[in-house]
Image (cartoon, rainbow, N blue to C red; front, side):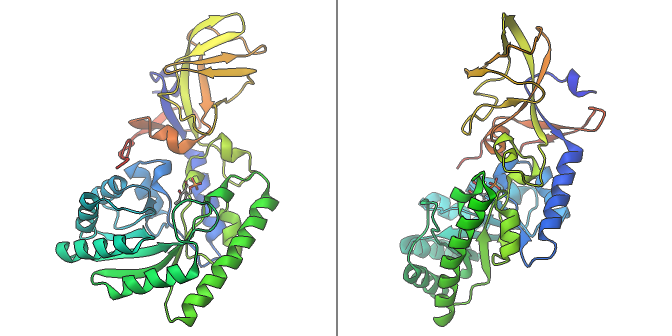
Length: 354
Ligand SMILES: Cc1ncc(COP(=O)(O)O)c(C=O)c1O
């Protein structure tokens, strides 16, 4: 079967580009001490997680407990939930899951640490903890090094918990279009982090893991060679937002859609808010320019003065955000250089937001 024969909208992936992105990431990391812990949220596909492990990833990162459960269910043995898990029912689930894999979770609160320890004792499991250090994104984490020390020592004192180290994720830097700006900001964060590490060393706290980084900062982080793990996710499939940064990764992910109605310079396609993640903007047609795109639930209205489309024509779209787009589909189709479908992969973590 060829891509053009798929019913639309369909999520399609250029297999060769995806493998080339894996190779580019290998080259970036090859002379560093940093290992890859790819973020699951960018594809949510068990088969691709296994492929990343086969090509050298140390384990997977995920955002949600349910994603971690999906990863354990498909046999991934080393997982980081790069988030805080605080509800009692979820803490129980997390402690059970920790009995089935090497599970790490981020913490930034003493009561949460105590609850995790109690649950791990109950479940007879070990939970690895990273104290989240807030490094400028203004999301989760503690900002003072004294607080990091206090939480690290609390983890060390609590049964069935292991203090592994720090998560310092600078998400506000990832998409800065200017490389100079990304570099400058990373350098600033490096100073803060080195200061923290020295303080922890003086207080005899051993930091084995420093986890963070993204697709946008992967090369800079590799040069910096301070983190032990890179949590990049989007590098594998990419999107039009990251394409602006001039990274060594190419776009592998497209939405195949069909023109369902045409009038004057307007073509309406069968892909809308429910089949394309719009949180980072409108998708871009692959091979023509549009003056304006308007989105509704099931449609995109493409206004193009130059491109004449007919009902039934196929339009390839590059999503602005791969992570929110894959979450809208049950499956993705891989295609080869002849645009033949070579595989269909289930997006097993789709919708796993709990
Ligand atoms: C905690 C965390 N780590 C890493 C990433 C990196 O993802 P990407 O490489 O797709 O920018 C994200 C993205 O949101 C994240 O939230």
